[in-house]
Image (tube, rainbow, N blue to C red):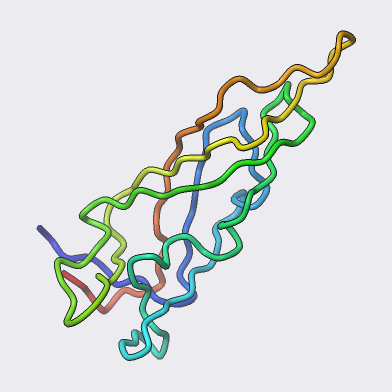
Length: 144
């Protein structure tokens, strides 16, 4: 398996849930914060397994999915591929590497609503599957 660039503090995650779903928190790439305390790349701490979902994306997130324009909420989960993790690390969590695109799942907690003359109609699609990928500025340090 080829190695890939190590993900570090300041690198980004881009999450895409296909239209018509709109999750404002993920419209732009979100910066990552590495939790390593001893491994750095270019002066920034590296990201470990578990750092792939930034704190700003861990709570219930508002969303709409036209014609369901009254916002609902949901939770985001990410499913990393083996190519997104180092094979091993010295003593602890694996290090995140760029790897391939992986799955993002948005699970609805309270559905967005479509206003109608007969009353609001809820969004019936409770699980919305998309993709996620790491965006790194590191072009020198590989993990494998």
